[in-house]
Image (tube, rainbow, N blue to C red; front, side):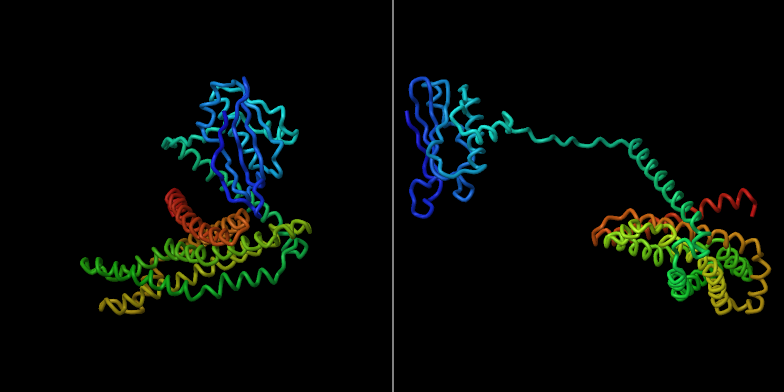
Length: 391
């Protein structure tokens, strides 16, 4: 019995025998698959034997031999075809004999499994809120610990670096101070002025109903000095300076500058982290005081212009009477903590970023989001502390 499939590709170079062909025949109790021609990928060879090719031969013989004496050139495409022949023979109940194959073909064929591996089943994840909340809590605590460790290392290197022996360059510190301070004066002025003006407008609308117009100064002064000026300034710095820190460090990581510093033994904490964090801690309290002045000025402008019974001198006198030094001390302390948190988290996010260009933008976005959320969370903690201390 003989079976021959149709041609799989036209002859290459006009040579008929280079054509990849296979023929099935039976002799007694054994069937033979004869393969000839060039079995390479360039010849568009068949990679599988038809599933019904052995249906007529399995009644004539129970074994299947392979004859590759007329194969001229071959590569892994022939091995793929022989593998399909072996699987088809096993499925038809025939014994596949590869004793006549060259040693190289036998070794390659032996590396393949008896059957293709079944595709991996992707189970639909089961929604488990306890698992998700636990993983989120563990990840958050891990990051808090990493940021705390980073802050401790930076604090340890600060005395030596400030004395000129720790690897920190004063030029970097002054550059960071200028970027975090004078360059941010305009946006801090605009935001805090508008916040004070909005508070004064909202307070005036309500307090006019009770003929308590003068207490608009109390509302604006206490709210801005105690809470809003510190929070708004910190949010501005998180979006403006924290994102810049993360993007800069992520770029250095992608350019292998961080690796170069580590190779030369230059501590990252004093060379990169300390100037960034220290500049924020120096300028944030000053920007907070500047923001307080601007917010009070915004409330002053709206109150004097909107309320006929309030004079400029009366508004300022009521503000100085309502806001005491304790409120400034509380806001000053908050601004220092906000500055340390923004600087450390931004540097941490930059240091753990990837090395591609897309990771730079991702790290900057993450630093802004984490900084803003962190400021709000810390402010809530400070509010609880102030309530406990009766401040």
